[in-house]
Image (tube, rainbow, N blue to C red; front, side):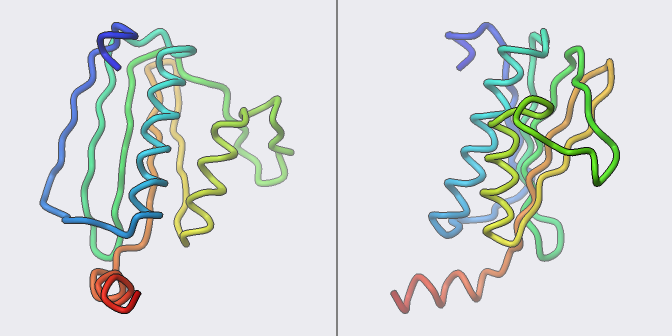
Length: 132
């Protein structure tokens, strides 16, 4: 990504999490992919930070830039549409929602942080893997 875009990316895996179910890994990968694409296309930032961590019973992936930020609607009835937030963000939200997770976005003129949060239940994942 850095070679293609010129955006320097730093990745921090705060602690060993191990493998997650394929659908969770794919959803988190797609959030990172879409976030980096948005940074390259829209933010004007020359750098991005990706952080993967586990907090209690959740896995979090944060993608942060120092770009120009984006306009966010603060009202629940803001009428989020493709025109106001984009297909990519809607797709990320839906993908995470199907896994019981959520997408949080904080943005200002100093940059944007996209946080994907999904439930973490190692025993349930292990049981699903072993049982088929």
